[in-house]
Amino acid sequence: MDQPVSEQSVLGALREALESGTMRAARRMVAGLRPGEIARLLESLPYTERRVVWELVDRDFEGEVLVELADDVRDSLIREMDVDQVVAATEGMAVDDLADLVVDLPEAITQQVLRSLDREDREELREVLAYPEDSAGGLMDTDTMSVRPDVSVEVVLRYLRAHDELPDRTDLLFVVDRDNHFLGTVALTSLLVADPDAIIEDLVTPEAMSVNALTDALEVARVFEDRDLLSIAVVDDDNLLVGRITVDDVIDVIRDEAEHSLMGAAGLDEDHDLFAPVFQSSRRRAFWLGINLLTAFVAASVVDLFQTTIDKVVLLAVLMPIVPSMGGVAGTQTLTIITRAIALGQIEASNALYVLRHEVLVGVINGFFWAGLVAVVTAVWFGTWDIGLLIAVALATNLVVAAVCGYAIPLILGRLRVDPALAGGVILTTITDVVGYGVFLGLGAAFLL
Image (cartoon, rainbow, N blue to C red; front, side, top):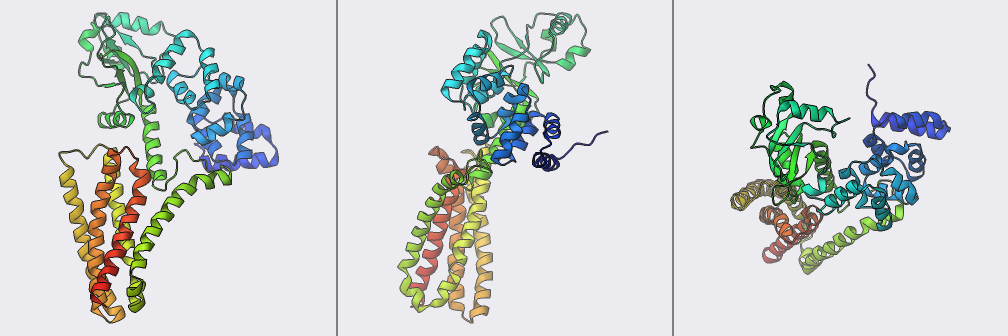
Protein backbone atom coordinates (compact mmCIF):
# COMPACT_ATOMS: atom_id res chain seq x y z
CA MET A 1 0.00 0.00 0.00
CA ASP A 2 1.28 3.48 -0.86
CA GLN A 3 2.30 5.52 2.14
CA PRO A 4 1.15 9.15 2.48
CA VAL A 5 3.81 11.66 1.50
CA SER A 6 4.51 14.55 3.85
CA GLU A 7 4.07 18.13 2.67
CA GLN A 8 7.75 18.75 3.40
CA SER A 9 8.90 15.94 1.08
CA VAL A 10 6.49 17.07 -1.67
CA LEU A 11 7.71 20.65 -1.28
CA GLY A 12 11.34 19.59 -1.55
CA ALA A 13 10.73 17.31 -4.54
CA LEU A 14 8.65 19.96 -6.29
CA ARG A 15 11.30 22.65 -5.85
CA GLU A 16 13.95 20.26 -7.21
CA ALA A 17 11.75 19.60 -10.24
CA LEU A 18 11.22 23.32 -10.81
CA GLU A 19 14.93 24.07 -10.49
CA SER A 20 15.85 21.30 -12.92
CA GLY A 21 13.14 22.33 -15.37
CA THR A 22 11.34 18.96 -15.34
CA MET A 23 7.86 20.45 -15.54
CA ARG A 24 6.17 17.18 -16.43
CA ALA A 25 7.25 15.66 -13.12
CA ALA A 26 6.16 18.81 -11.28
CA ARG A 27 2.74 18.67 -12.96
CA ARG A 28 2.32 15.03 -11.90
CA MET A 29 3.15 15.93 -8.30
CA VAL A 30 0.59 18.73 -8.23
CA ALA A 31 -2.04 16.55 -9.91
CA GLY A 32 -1.66 13.97 -7.14
CA LEU A 33 -2.62 16.45 -4.41
CA ARG A 34 -6.02 17.46 -3.08
CA PRO A 35 -7.09 21.15 -3.21
CA GLY A 36 -6.25 21.77 0.46
CA GLU A 37 -2.81 20.22 0.01
CA ILE A 38 -2.16 22.34 -3.07
CA ALA A 39 -3.15 25.44 -1.10
CA ARG A 40 -0.68 24.64 1.70
CA LEU A 41 1.98 23.97 -0.92
CA LEU A 42 1.40 27.31 -2.64
CA GLU A 43 1.60 29.12 0.71
CA SER A 44 5.00 27.49 1.27
CA LEU A 45 6.54 28.80 -1.95
CA PRO A 46 8.15 32.16 -2.78
CA TYR A 47 6.17 34.35 -5.13
CA THR A 48 7.94 33.45 -8.40
CA GLU A 49 7.74 29.68 -7.78
CA ARG A 50 4.15 30.06 -6.59
CA ARG A 51 3.12 31.54 -9.93
CA VAL A 52 4.75 28.67 -11.82
CA VAL A 53 3.05 26.01 -9.68
CA TRP A 54 -0.30 27.79 -9.95
CA GLU A 55 -0.10 27.36 -13.73
CA LEU A 56 0.25 23.60 -13.15
CA VAL A 57 -3.02 23.33 -11.19
CA ASP A 58 -5.87 21.64 -13.04
CA ARG A 59 -8.37 24.32 -14.11
CA ASP A 60 -11.23 22.24 -12.68
CA PHE A 61 -9.73 22.56 -9.18
CA GLU A 62 -8.66 26.22 -9.22
CA GLY A 63 -11.77 27.45 -7.40
CA GLU A 64 -11.45 24.87 -4.63
CA VAL A 65 -7.78 25.73 -4.19
CA LEU A 66 -8.51 29.47 -4.04
CA VAL A 67 -11.03 28.91 -1.23
CA GLU A 68 -8.43 27.06 0.84
CA LEU A 69 -5.74 29.74 0.49
CA ALA A 70 -4.96 32.47 3.01
CA ASP A 71 -6.39 35.82 1.90
CA ASP A 72 -3.04 37.43 1.06
CA VAL A 73 -1.91 34.51 -1.09
CA ARG A 74 -5.29 34.27 -2.81
CA ASP A 75 -5.28 37.99 -3.58
CA SER A 76 -1.80 37.80 -5.08
CA LEU A 77 -2.88 35.00 -7.44
CA ILE A 78 -6.18 36.60 -8.43
CA ARG A 79 -4.37 39.80 -9.37
CA GLU A 80 -2.50 37.77 -11.98
CA MET A 81 -5.69 36.18 -13.40
CA ASP A 82 -8.00 37.77 -15.93
CA VAL A 83 -11.72 38.04 -15.18
CA ASP A 84 -12.72 35.13 -17.42
CA GLN A 85 -10.23 32.85 -15.69
CA VAL A 86 -11.59 33.75 -12.25
CA VAL A 87 -15.17 33.20 -13.42
CA ALA A 88 -14.22 29.84 -14.94
CA ALA A 89 -12.58 28.81 -11.65
CA THR A 90 -15.89 29.31 -9.80
CA GLU A 91 -17.90 27.00 -12.08
CA GLY A 92 -19.36 24.01 -10.27
CA MET A 93 -18.32 25.18 -6.79
CA ALA A 94 -20.60 24.52 -3.84
CA VAL A 95 -22.55 27.61 -2.81
CA ASP A 96 -20.96 27.84 0.65
CA ASP A 97 -17.45 27.64 -0.84
CA LEU A 98 -18.37 30.15 -3.53
CA ALA A 99 -19.67 32.53 -0.86
CA ASP A 100 -16.34 32.31 0.97
CA LEU A 101 -14.54 33.22 -2.24
CA VAL A 102 -16.65 36.04 -3.69
CA VAL A 103 -16.64 38.15 -0.52
CA ASP A 104 -12.93 38.77 -1.11
CA LEU A 105 -13.17 39.40 -4.85
CA PRO A 106 -13.23 42.86 -6.42
CA GLU A 107 -16.79 44.07 -7.02
CA ALA A 108 -16.48 43.92 -10.82
CA ILE A 109 -15.39 40.26 -10.72
CA THR A 110 -18.11 39.41 -8.18
CA GLN A 111 -20.77 40.77 -10.55
CA GLN A 112 -19.32 38.69 -13.40
CA VAL A 113 -19.43 35.58 -11.23
CA LEU A 114 -23.06 36.26 -10.30
CA ARG A 115 -24.02 36.70 -13.93
CA SER A 116 -22.36 33.39 -14.81
CA LEU A 117 -24.61 31.46 -12.39
CA ASP A 118 -28.01 30.08 -13.20
CA ARG A 119 -30.99 31.67 -11.45
CA GLU A 120 -31.27 29.05 -8.70
CA ASP A 121 -27.57 29.15 -7.75
CA ARG A 122 -27.58 32.96 -7.89
CA GLU A 123 -30.47 33.15 -5.43
CA GLU A 124 -28.86 30.62 -3.11
CA LEU A 125 -25.59 32.54 -3.18
CA ARG A 126 -27.32 35.83 -2.42
CA GLU A 127 -29.13 34.14 0.47
CA VAL A 128 -25.83 33.03 2.00
CA LEU A 129 -24.17 36.40 1.38
CA ALA A 130 -27.04 38.14 3.16
CA TYR A 131 -25.71 36.76 6.48
CA PRO A 132 -22.53 37.89 8.27
CA GLU A 133 -19.49 35.94 7.17
CA ASP A 134 -18.79 34.74 10.74
CA SER A 135 -22.34 33.48 11.35
CA ALA A 136 -24.07 30.14 10.83
CA GLY A 137 -25.78 31.60 7.77
CA GLY A 138 -22.42 32.63 6.35
CA LEU A 139 -21.09 29.09 6.85
CA MET A 140 -24.09 27.14 5.66
CA ASP A 141 -24.67 25.22 2.45
CA THR A 142 -28.18 25.66 1.09
CA ASP A 143 -28.05 22.24 -0.63
CA THR A 144 -30.09 20.14 1.80
CA MET A 145 -32.08 16.91 1.64
CA SER A 146 -35.48 17.27 3.30
CA VAL A 147 -38.50 14.98 3.58
CA ARG A 148 -42.03 15.18 4.95
CA PRO A 149 -42.97 13.33 8.15
CA ASP A 150 -46.02 11.58 6.66
CA VAL A 151 -44.28 9.54 3.95
CA SER A 152 -42.96 6.00 4.20
CA VAL A 153 -39.36 4.84 4.34
CA GLU A 154 -39.80 3.11 0.97
CA VAL A 155 -40.91 6.37 -0.65
CA VAL A 156 -37.92 8.20 0.79
CA LEU A 157 -35.49 5.53 -0.39
CA ARG A 158 -36.93 5.73 -3.92
CA TYR A 159 -36.56 9.51 -3.73
CA LEU A 160 -32.89 9.19 -2.75
CA ARG A 161 -32.14 6.63 -5.48
CA ALA A 162 -33.62 8.99 -8.06
CA HIS A 163 -30.67 11.34 -7.48
CA ASP A 164 -27.41 10.80 -9.33
CA GLU A 165 -25.58 11.75 -6.14
CA LEU A 166 -26.34 13.17 -2.70
CA PRO A 167 -24.86 16.41 -1.35
CA ASP A 168 -21.39 15.88 0.08
CA ARG A 169 -21.23 14.61 3.68
CA THR A 170 -24.94 13.85 3.88
CA ASP A 171 -25.52 11.87 7.07
CA LEU A 172 -29.00 13.18 7.93
CA LEU A 173 -32.25 13.97 6.20
CA PHE A 174 -34.06 17.01 7.56
CA VAL A 175 -37.74 16.53 8.30
CA VAL A 176 -39.94 19.53 7.51
CA ASP A 177 -43.64 20.24 7.25
CA ARG A 178 -45.40 21.56 4.15
CA ASP A 179 -44.31 25.11 5.01
CA ASN A 180 -40.66 24.05 5.42
CA HIS A 181 -40.64 24.38 9.22
CA PHE A 182 -37.88 22.24 10.74
CA LEU A 183 -39.25 19.29 12.73
CA GLY A 184 -36.23 17.10 13.31
CA THR A 185 -33.85 14.71 11.54
CA VAL A 186 -33.63 11.13 10.33
CA ALA A 187 -30.24 9.44 10.07
CA LEU A 188 -29.45 7.65 6.83
CA THR A 189 -28.34 4.65 8.86
CA SER A 190 -31.82 4.47 10.42
CA LEU A 191 -33.43 4.46 6.98
CA LEU A 192 -31.27 1.58 5.80
CA VAL A 193 -32.41 -0.77 8.58
CA ALA A 194 -36.00 0.47 8.99
CA ASP A 195 -39.13 -1.36 7.84
CA PRO A 196 -39.94 -0.05 4.33
CA ASP A 197 -43.54 0.53 5.42
CA ALA A 198 -42.54 2.58 8.49
CA ILE A 199 -43.52 6.24 8.49
CA ILE A 200 -40.80 8.88 8.74
CA GLU A 201 -42.63 10.51 11.62
CA ASP A 202 -41.92 7.39 13.71
CA LEU A 203 -38.18 7.59 12.97
CA VAL A 204 -37.65 11.31 13.39
CA THR A 205 -35.42 12.66 16.15
CA PRO A 206 -37.49 15.62 17.36
CA GLU A 207 -34.85 16.80 19.84
CA ALA A 208 -32.32 17.13 17.02
CA MET A 209 -30.25 20.28 17.23
CA SER A 210 -30.59 23.22 14.90
CA VAL A 211 -28.89 26.62 14.97
CA ASN A 212 -30.25 30.01 14.05
CA ALA A 213 -28.70 31.49 10.93
CA LEU A 214 -27.40 34.46 12.94
CA THR A 215 -25.58 32.31 15.53
CA ASP A 216 -21.88 33.18 15.81
CA ALA A 217 -19.57 30.77 13.98
CA LEU A 218 -17.57 30.03 17.14
CA GLU A 219 -20.77 29.10 18.97
CA VAL A 220 -21.60 26.73 16.11
CA ALA A 221 -18.16 25.15 16.50
CA ARG A 222 -18.80 24.64 20.24
CA VAL A 223 -22.10 22.93 19.47
CA PHE A 224 -20.36 20.52 17.07
CA GLU A 225 -17.68 19.80 19.67
CA ASP A 226 -20.10 19.29 22.56
CA ARG A 227 -22.45 17.01 20.60
CA ASP A 228 -19.98 15.24 18.28
CA LEU A 229 -21.99 16.27 15.22
CA LEU A 230 -21.25 15.69 11.55
CA SER A 231 -23.90 18.14 10.34
CA ILE A 232 -26.61 20.41 11.71
CA ALA A 233 -29.67 22.20 10.37
CA VAL A 234 -29.69 25.99 10.02
CA VAL A 235 -33.02 27.74 10.55
CA ASP A 236 -34.23 31.33 10.43
CA ASP A 237 -36.18 33.22 13.11
CA ASP A 238 -39.40 31.48 11.99
CA ASN A 239 -37.81 28.01 12.31
CA LEU A 240 -37.75 27.59 8.53
CA LEU A 241 -34.99 25.33 7.22
CA VAL A 242 -32.53 27.49 5.24
CA GLY A 243 -29.44 25.29 5.05
CA ARG A 244 -27.02 23.00 6.81
CA ILE A 245 -23.49 23.17 8.21
CA THR A 246 -21.11 20.22 7.97
CA VAL A 247 -18.09 19.38 10.07
CA ASP A 248 -15.57 20.42 7.38
CA ASP A 249 -16.88 23.99 7.63
CA VAL A 250 -16.47 23.90 11.41
CA ILE A 251 -12.88 22.64 11.13
CA ASP A 252 -12.10 25.73 9.06
CA VAL A 253 -13.61 27.95 11.79
CA ILE A 254 -11.54 26.27 14.51
CA ARG A 255 -8.35 26.55 12.46
CA ASP A 256 -8.97 30.19 11.63
CA GLU A 257 -9.62 31.03 15.28
CA ALA A 258 -6.46 29.24 16.41
CA GLU A 259 -4.40 31.08 13.80
CA HIS A 260 -6.03 34.37 14.74
CA SER A 261 -5.18 33.91 18.43
CA LEU A 262 -1.59 32.93 17.67
CA MET A 263 -0.90 35.71 15.16
CA GLY A 264 -3.00 38.31 16.95
CA ALA A 265 -0.83 38.00 20.05
CA ALA A 266 2.00 39.44 17.94
CA GLY A 267 -0.22 42.06 16.31
CA LEU A 268 -0.30 40.18 12.99
CA ASP A 269 -3.05 39.10 10.62
CA GLU A 270 -3.71 35.35 10.52
CA ASP A 271 -3.78 35.55 6.70
CA HIS A 272 -0.26 36.98 6.56
CA ASP A 273 1.73 35.69 3.60
CA LEU A 274 5.11 34.35 4.70
CA PHE A 275 6.55 35.19 1.27
CA ALA A 276 4.95 38.60 0.82
CA PRO A 277 7.21 41.38 -0.53
CA VAL A 278 9.59 42.68 2.12
CA PHE A 279 8.26 46.24 2.14
CA GLN A 280 4.67 44.99 2.39
CA SER A 281 5.54 42.81 5.39
CA SER A 282 7.49 45.65 6.99
CA ARG A 283 4.57 48.04 6.59
CA ARG A 284 2.12 45.62 8.18
CA ARG A 285 4.33 44.94 11.18
CA ALA A 286 5.26 48.60 11.65
CA PHE A 287 1.96 49.66 13.22
CA TRP A 288 2.17 47.50 16.33
CA LEU A 289 5.91 48.11 16.62
CA GLY A 290 5.06 51.82 16.72
CA ILE A 291 2.39 51.26 19.37
CA ASN A 292 4.86 49.23 21.42
CA LEU A 293 7.46 51.99 21.08
CA LEU A 294 5.00 54.55 22.43
CA THR A 295 4.20 52.37 25.44
CA ALA A 296 7.93 51.85 26.00
CA PHE A 297 8.35 55.61 26.18
CA VAL A 298 5.57 55.72 28.79
CA ALA A 299 7.49 53.19 30.92
CA ALA A 300 10.75 55.09 30.32
CA SER A 301 9.14 58.31 31.51
CA VAL A 302 8.29 56.60 34.81
CA VAL A 303 11.94 55.56 35.20
CA ASP A 304 13.03 59.10 34.39
CA LEU A 305 10.98 60.42 37.34
CA PHE A 306 13.33 58.53 39.65
CA GLN A 307 16.61 59.39 37.93
CA THR A 308 17.99 60.96 41.10
CA THR A 309 17.16 57.85 43.10
CA ILE A 310 18.89 55.61 40.55
CA ASP A 311 21.99 57.84 40.54
CA LYS A 312 22.31 57.54 44.32
CA VAL A 313 21.42 53.85 44.62
CA VAL A 314 22.91 52.21 41.53
CA LEU A 315 21.80 48.73 42.59
CA LEU A 316 18.23 49.76 41.80
CA ALA A 317 19.15 50.09 38.11
CA VAL A 318 20.66 46.60 38.15
CA LEU A 319 17.61 44.96 39.69
CA MET A 320 14.67 46.97 38.40
CA PRO A 321 14.14 44.99 35.09
CA ILE A 322 13.21 41.95 37.21
CA VAL A 323 9.95 43.44 38.51
CA PRO A 324 8.25 44.42 35.20
CA SER A 325 9.57 41.29 33.48
CA MET A 326 8.03 38.94 36.06
CA GLY A 327 4.81 40.95 36.06
CA GLY A 328 4.62 40.80 32.25
CA VAL A 329 5.02 37.02 32.18
CA ALA A 330 2.47 36.44 34.95
CA GLY A 331 0.00 38.84 33.38
CA THR A 332 0.39 37.22 29.97
CA GLN A 333 -0.42 33.84 31.48
CA THR A 334 -3.67 35.17 32.93
CA LEU A 335 -4.46 37.16 29.78
CA THR A 336 -4.04 34.07 27.61
CA ILE A 337 -6.18 31.91 29.88
CA ILE A 338 -9.00 34.47 30.06
CA THR A 339 -8.91 35.23 26.33
CA ARG A 340 -9.23 31.50 25.63
CA ALA A 341 -12.03 31.15 28.18
CA ILE A 342 -13.94 33.98 26.52
CA ALA A 343 -13.55 32.34 23.12
CA LEU A 344 -14.87 29.06 24.53
CA GLY A 345 -17.76 30.76 26.33
CA GLN A 346 -16.52 29.64 29.75
CA ILE A 347 -16.91 33.02 31.46
CA GLU A 348 -20.29 34.57 32.20
CA ALA A 349 -21.87 36.71 34.91
CA SER A 350 -22.47 33.75 37.23
CA ASN A 351 -18.80 32.73 37.50
CA ALA A 352 -16.92 35.95 36.67
CA LEU A 353 -16.30 36.85 40.33
CA TYR A 354 -15.04 33.35 41.10
CA VAL A 355 -12.58 33.49 38.18
CA LEU A 356 -11.34 36.91 39.34
CA ARG A 357 -10.83 35.65 42.89
CA HIS A 358 -9.03 32.57 41.57
CA GLU A 359 -6.61 34.61 39.45
CA VAL A 360 -5.93 37.10 42.27
CA LEU A 361 -5.14 34.26 44.67
CA VAL A 362 -2.79 32.73 42.10
CA GLY A 363 -1.10 36.13 41.81
CA VAL A 364 -0.84 36.46 45.60
CA ILE A 365 0.66 32.98 46.06
CA ASN A 366 3.15 33.39 43.23
CA GLY A 367 3.86 36.94 44.36
CA PHE A 368 4.81 35.98 47.90
CA PHE A 369 6.73 32.89 46.84
CA TRP A 370 8.89 34.60 44.20
CA ALA A 371 9.17 37.76 46.26
CA GLY A 372 10.65 35.78 49.14
CA LEU A 373 13.03 33.96 46.81
CA VAL A 374 14.18 37.19 45.14
CA ALA A 375 14.66 38.88 48.53
CA VAL A 376 16.95 36.08 49.72
CA VAL A 377 18.94 35.97 46.46
CA THR A 378 19.34 39.76 46.46
CA ALA A 379 20.44 39.85 50.10
CA VAL A 380 23.00 37.11 49.52
CA TRP A 381 24.19 38.62 46.24
CA PHE A 382 24.57 42.23 47.35
CA GLY A 383 24.91 41.74 51.10
CA THR A 384 21.95 43.95 52.03
CA TRP A 385 18.40 43.14 53.07
CA ASP A 386 17.09 46.66 52.39
CA ILE A 387 16.97 46.36 48.62
CA GLY A 388 15.96 42.68 48.88
CA LEU A 389 12.84 43.61 50.86
CA LEU A 390 12.03 46.50 48.49
CA ILE A 391 12.18 44.32 45.39
CA ALA A 392 10.14 41.65 47.18
CA VAL A 393 7.32 44.10 47.95
CA ALA A 394 7.43 45.54 44.42
CA LEU A 395 7.43 42.09 42.82
CA ALA A 396 4.51 40.83 44.94
CA THR A 397 2.53 43.97 44.16
CA ASN A 398 3.19 43.75 40.42
CA LEU A 399 2.25 40.07 40.21
CA VAL A 400 -1.11 40.75 41.86
CA VAL A 401 -1.71 43.75 39.59
CA ALA A 402 -0.74 41.62 36.60
CA ALA A 403 -3.28 38.95 37.58
CA VAL A 404 -6.08 41.51 37.94
CA CYS A 405 -5.21 43.24 34.66
CA GLY A 406 -4.78 39.95 32.80
CA TYR A 407 -8.32 39.11 33.90
CA ALA A 408 -9.92 42.50 33.30
CA ILE A 409 -8.30 43.61 30.02
CA PRO A 410 -9.83 40.98 27.70
CA LEU A 411 -13.26 41.43 29.30
CA ILE A 412 -13.13 45.21 28.91
CA LEU A 413 -11.81 45.00 25.34
CA GLY A 414 -14.55 42.51 24.50
CA ARG A 415 -17.22 44.93 25.70
CA LEU A 416 -15.61 47.66 23.60
CA ARG A 417 -15.63 45.28 20.59
CA VAL A 418 -11.84 45.34 20.41
CA ASP A 419 -10.06 42.04 19.78
CA PRO A 420 -8.29 41.01 23.05
CA ALA A 421 -5.84 38.80 21.14
CA LEU A 422 -4.68 41.81 19.15
CA ALA A 423 -4.56 44.63 21.71
CA GLY A 424 -4.46 42.90 25.10
CA GLY A 425 -0.74 42.15 25.20
CA VAL A 426 0.34 45.72 24.47
CA ILE A 427 -1.93 47.19 27.14
CA LEU A 428 -0.90 44.59 29.71
CA THR A 429 2.82 45.11 29.08
CA THR A 430 2.44 48.85 29.52
CA ILE A 431 0.63 48.46 32.84
CA THR A 432 3.06 45.92 34.30
CA ASP A 433 6.04 48.03 33.19
CA VAL A 434 4.64 51.23 34.66
CA VAL A 435 3.53 49.59 37.92
CA GLY A 436 6.72 47.54 38.23
CA TYR A 437 9.08 50.46 37.70
CA GLY A 438 6.89 52.89 39.63
CA VAL A 439 6.48 50.77 42.77
CA PHE A 440 10.10 49.56 42.90
CA LEU A 441 11.70 52.93 42.28
CA GLY A 442 9.10 54.73 44.40
CA LEU A 443 9.87 52.50 47.36
CA GLY A 444 13.57 53.05 46.75
CA ALA A 445 13.10 56.84 46.79
CA ALA A 446 11.00 56.64 49.96
CA PHE A 447 13.21 54.34 52.06
CA LEU A 448 16.75 54.43 50.70
CA LEU A 449 17.39 58.16 50.34
